[in-house]
Image (cartoon, rainbow, N blue to C red; front, side):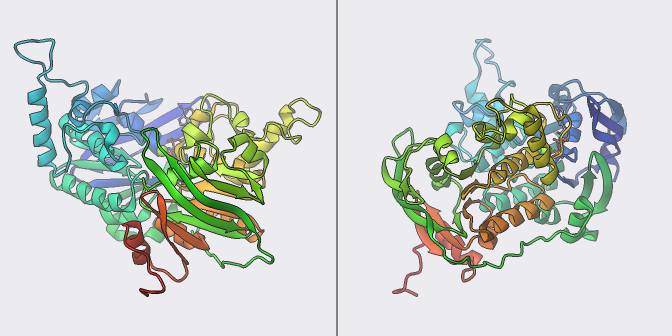
Length: 513
Ligand SMILES: Nc1ncnc2c1ncn2[C@@H]1O[C@H](COP(=O)(O)OP(=O)(O)OP(=O)(O)O)[C@@H](O)[C@H]1O
Ligand SMILES: [Mg+2]
C-alpha cells in the first residue's frame, strides 16, 4: 500500500530544545497507525505539525507523495486531515448539531443571514446514522458524557469529510466500557476507508486496534513495527529502554499498630442544580492503608474528592482526620495538616499554567521554612527543590525557567505527584494519578504509592482504571449513584464482581452469599 501521509526529516525546536528531531513518519492508506512513547517524547508535537497547528522548524510533509505545507488546521482539514485534541473544544450550551456544524453552517437560501437548521439537522442525522453512532442532534452538549462529547469531536471531522483522522490520547478520558465501544468504532471507520493515527499509552489498545506502530523516544523515532509482529512487552521495552513491570508488585504489607487516619461519616452534597451527587458516604482509612474507590465515572467520585480536598462543601456528614473534625476545611488548611492532594484535572486544579515550573513546584508549601529560611524566599532552595522533582520523576522539560504550560500532558501530571509526595503528607488523596502517564512512569508512581503506604501513609486512591484500583488498594469501595454500594477486598474479588457492583447490582451480603 502506498504512503498516505509521510514526513521527511521533520524537525521542531522550541528555543534550544528539540522536541522532534528529523522524524520520518509514514502512514499507509486505510490503516490504523499507533504512536507510542514516553511522556514528552514528542508525539503531540508531531501531530500538531501534521495538522497545521505548529510550524515545523525544518523538514517536509507529504500527502499522497505530494509535498504539502499547511499554515493552519483549516488548511489541513481542506486537505482531508482532521485531528481531535485531548482537550475538547466544544461549546457546552450548543446542541449536538450546532457543534458539528460550527464554522460550516448551512445558509438559508431565502434569508441568507439565517442558517438552515432543518437542513443542518438532517445532514447531521444522516452522518450519525452513516457511522453508526447513537446521538440526538438536538441534545445540549452540556448534558452529554465525556464519551459522547468525543463522538461529536470525531463527527465534526467526518462532516468535513477528512480521510485521515488524528486522535491524541482519545481513550484516556473514557471509562473502560466507553473504551471498548470506541475501539469498535475505530475499526468501523477503518472499514469505511479512513486512515487513522492514534496516540495512546495503553498498549492493550495498540495491540487490539492498530495495524502498525511507531515508537518515539526523546524526540526521535526509535522503531517502526507491524502490530502482529510485536507484543506489549516488546513495545514497553522499546519505549522505556528496559523491561517494565506491567503489573505492580504489591505485598499488602500490614503495618504495625494501625490507627484510623481518616473517618468519613454520612458525607452528602448536592451539585449546583440541587441534585444529590454524593449521598451518605461513609468509610475510613487507616495508617498504612490504601483505600480505593472504583466506579463508572460520573457516580460521585469526582465530587467526593472535591469534598475531601476543600474544593466543594458538604450539606451534611463529617470528615475527621487524626481525631480532628476537618469538615469543609479549605484546601490550604488541609494541606498544612498533612494532606497531599492530586486533583483530577491537572491544569484546572493542580497547576497554574501561567506560572513557572519553580513556582508550581512549591505551590501549597509557600509558607514552609524550607523555602524561606530567613523569612524571605530563597531562590536557590526553590530551584534546587524543583530540580530534584524533575530529576526524581524524570520530568521532561524544554526550559527550566519556562511556564508550566510548556509541559506535555503526562509530564504535568508527574510534576503534581512529585510535588505532593515530596511534602511527605500523612494522607494522600490521589484522583486519577496515572491518567495520561506513560507506562514506565506508571510503574514508578505505583511504586511510590505503595512505598508511601508501607511507611505508614494513608492513601485514598480514586481511579477509573479498575485494574489500578484492584492492584494497589487494600480495600475498595465501589461508588454508584453517589453512594458506596459495596466494599470489597481486592485480593478476594474479581473484576467481574466489581463490574457488577459498578453497574449497580446489589452487593453480596452474608445472607445472599
Ligand atoms: N510550546 C512549547 N514550548 C516549549 N516546549 C514545548 C512546547 N510544546 C511542547 N514542548 C516540549 O516538547 C516536548 C514534547 O512534547 P509533546 O507534547 O510532543 O510530548 P508527548 O509525547 O505528546 O507527551 P505526553 O505523552 O506526555 O503527552 C516536551 O518536553 C515539552 O515540554
Ligand atoms: Mg501528548
